[in-house]
Amino acid sequence: MSSRSHHIGGRTLARCQALQLMFQAEACGRSVADVLAGEYAVDPGPLDEYGEFLARGADECRSDLDHVLSGATRNWSLSRMSATDRNLLRISLYEMLHNDEVPVSVSIDECVELAKDFGSSDESSRFVNGILGRIAAQLDEGVDVVAVARERAAKEAAEAAERSAREAEERARQEAENAAYDDGYGYDDYGYENESAAEQSASAGSSSDDVPSWANEGE
Image 1 (cartoon, rainbow, N blue to C red):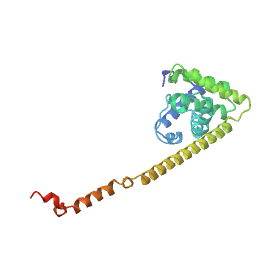
Image 2: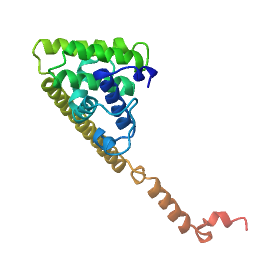
Image 3: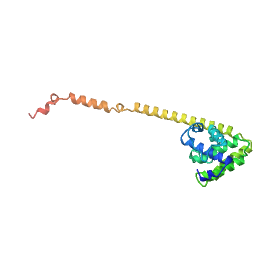
Image 4: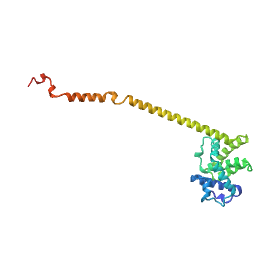
């Protein structure tokens, strides 16, 4: 993390600590709860209560948060984002949805500032601001962004399952057609084997006794 983490305090520090916990959990494929149950590092420490609240909450709601964020991104999947940008977005969105005491605009501003210091590139702050801004606009309109995201995710999963089933059916059909073709036009059906057998039989049946009489006339 940037050296700036040593000079921040309050809830900004808590958000920074939450980011560190989320990053550690994702990096080792564990939950934040598991990370907190073992050895972990936050700099500076000790762990702020609000930082733990954000990290635990964002991790527990990760699936819903990711669905909402995926709907707000434009031609850029979560998997393509850097771990830092991705987890900053999760933390900020969780705060926007689950802490009414913090104005949405403050959550976004805090995320943007942290992205300037810890983001993956100089564009990180603009990137997270754009995504969270689109979600904030939906919240202002009274949209239940989680319910909408769940519905969209369920529809996409159903469509993916349908495509997979069609592809499997098509593969099975092609395999059946290929098998029928092989059975219907096999080696034996061209008569090669039978012809060879007939030739062998004729050759075996021929002998010097079968030589015509005129062939011996010169003797």
